[in-house]
Image (cartoon, rainbow, N blue to C red; front, side):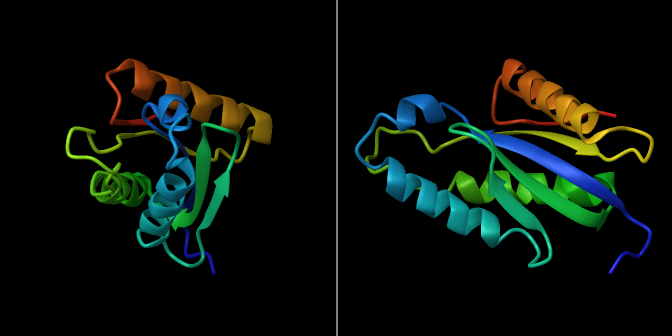
Length: 132
């Protein structure tokens, strides 16, 4: 049920996922990350895999503060995922956050999200970037 908040798209990736996908534990890593992410979002939010390296979360009835807080909570929880050995760093989480504008197409909205994610990764990874 909507209470006047906005619809937000969080487009995200696990930093260095391409390299991690080459390892023997890629499936267990993705399961662990998915479990952590699901624990950070509401049951009414939607979690999806977009492609090999990117994922999305749709958060309804939220504002920028709530969307950013969700992204931060996910980042903290993903950092707790073990990659299997002491010398492996915990995975990072880069995310682009965008609110849907009523006057834009879905394609425009997702392009803004992709731009925000790219800027987040370019800024040094393990970061959130809100793009208006």
